[in-house]
Length: 115
Length: 117
Image (tube, rainbow over all chains, first blue to last red; front, side, top):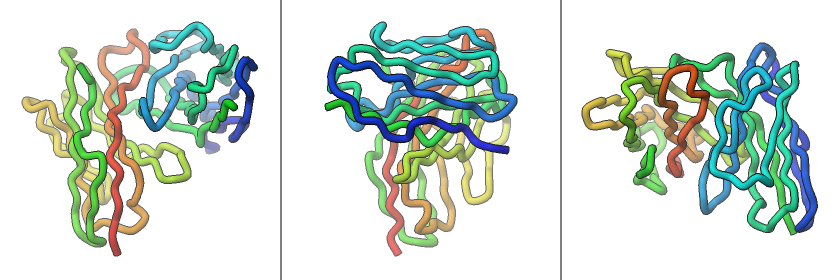
């Protein structure tokens, strides 16, 4: 079974631009979560989608948005990029919600650099 | 308050020795799950082991075991017989609540493990 895939793997943008990152979850997984990872802040939760609905949102400004399609693929968008948005963006999928052994499977990440 | 605390920014261990990575958590929810992930320099997060709040026994997965002390709210990862390939960042994470609360994971700041030949 193929793992979580993220595209693109690397991205360089300039301040003020916008960017769209894509995530394809493991087949059959309906939950997709996004995280931002930086050396200073560590792993921070952005949002989670389940069956095309945003179920949870972290403490990020409205410049960060996302959506999920009917095939569970997800995109996140960052508008008006700032230097501080430079980070590794990780996508994770899981089969269902619930406390059980419902681990998240992570993709390789998209490394975004804002110049 | 931090949901997950990892107090060891960096650890060193001799190859073939065992090492314990510390993790404490904070929650008032009786239902939660604890996870450990490994992140090599390549960046991908790799799931290692899971412990549910109602599990009576400590979880084990091959060379990984989780020392779960519920009263102390600690969930330390033990790696036995360390290998050079174990050198990586290790993250402790928690998911709290029931299914309708979504799937947010709280991560610690990580511990960088270096295995010395």
